[in-house]
Length: 71
Image (tube, rainbow, N blue to C red; front, side, top):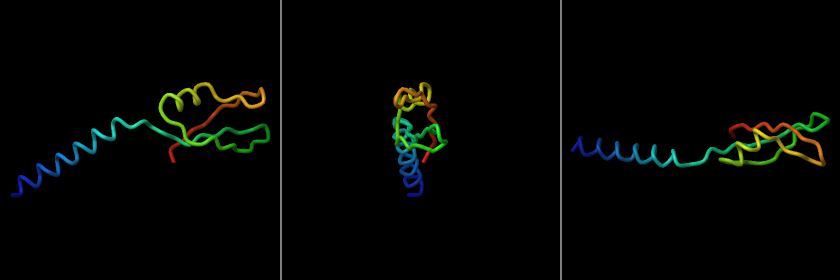
């Protein structure tokens, strides 16, 4: 009976690991305006997150670097 329990727990652990691999990574993002105020942009995931971090954001013709971090 103990072997069945360990096999069952192993199957659950494997399922949890495989399920988590398919999820996109998401982070909260912000930039600092000209007055050094932090402006929250919200949560971004996957390609959108990568593009925002790589390219920044433009607000009223001014380009800002964007910083993203885990919640």
